[in-house]
Image (cartoon, rainbow, N blue to C red):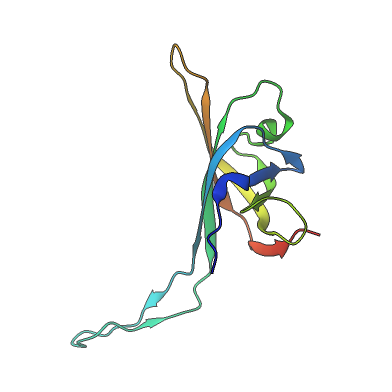
Length: 130
């Protein structure tokens, strides 16, 4: 079993490559419903609650970048999250998400760091690059 290095990951937003991505996080949840009754010693639950996904993208700000321009707070955008590159056969996550937050961090002698947070709207699919 070989490890996968994250340095080849990349992101597209609205069909545009997002420049200078430093990292991205993806969280997929399958919530459960508690079905435990009073007096029971062990918890039981029901599966089947709607799944959800969310995450964030960290990038260095690039003036005029079309991909970063797609990631405005409140925007609905199609995201492709390439886990280990976009070469043929590689797997990536794909879905429509709402950008919920855009954060800027900058210092006097540093480049501007951007963080874009998103929440999925509908399914996240995993596909292979053609």
